[in-house]
Image (cartoon, rainbow, N blue to C red; front, side, top):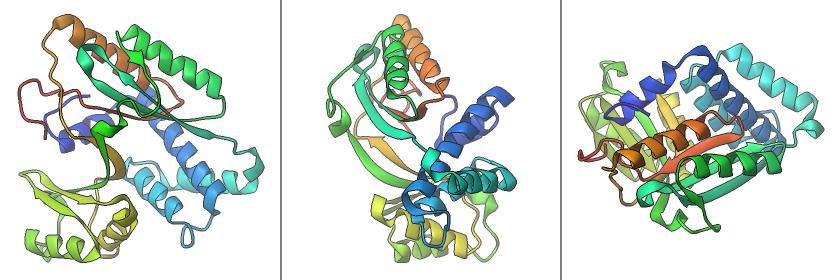
Amino acid sequence: MAGHSKFANIKHRKGKNDAARGRIFTRLGRELAMAVKLGGPDPVANSRLRDAIANAKSENMPNDTIERSIKKAAGDISAVNYEAATYEGYGPGGVAVIVEVLTDNRNRAASGVRHAFTKGGGSLGAQGCVSFLFDEIGQILVERGALSAQWGEDELMMLTADAGAQDFLSSEEGFEIVTAPGDFSAVREALQDAGIPVVHAEIIKKPQTWVSLTEPEHLKQMNKMLNLLDDDDDVQSIYHNYNEQSEEEPQ
């Protein structure tokens, strides 16, 4: 949870130690398995699997590891019993938090999430208590320096717009392409077909507003909650409206 831009945050996550990278690969493997279970092992016919593979590659998961995960899930599909669940609540200072899990033991997952909220000075709420504060979008990041000479900013914007993108945001480091969830796969695949490397591509929940924490105890508690959730193998995604950049505008 460091850095002052989406690109810095991605690089920080990819630079984590082996134990942390192992947890990321575990989560990616579960998503691959679920995609196979829901739509089969052929990525040509399974858009969710195509997206899961692309996400795994963007996180530098080795190709042979991806292939093994798919083959394992396809060969023992009845054993893939992961269940998705979403938990919502508030952290210290009124920060809204959404936690998505993919687990083979729902009781364990619920206990782990509750423990993180409690230790972090927060509280779990009812389903829907904070989700209205977030918009679900597709987010694709392309680094400026990764573009070949044939792709300028205008050409990239036109390509993604033609594929269905809703918005195109430019910064010094690169470009953020925003899509509706239903258009995410088409836009990502348009970039892939054009040979444009994507540093990150994911459907996320984006906060509508941000909360800044100034009390030292709140800051300590919030970081504790996020670290506990990040260390939990059942947790797939964590969304919150905590402005980690303090008084700076969120990037």
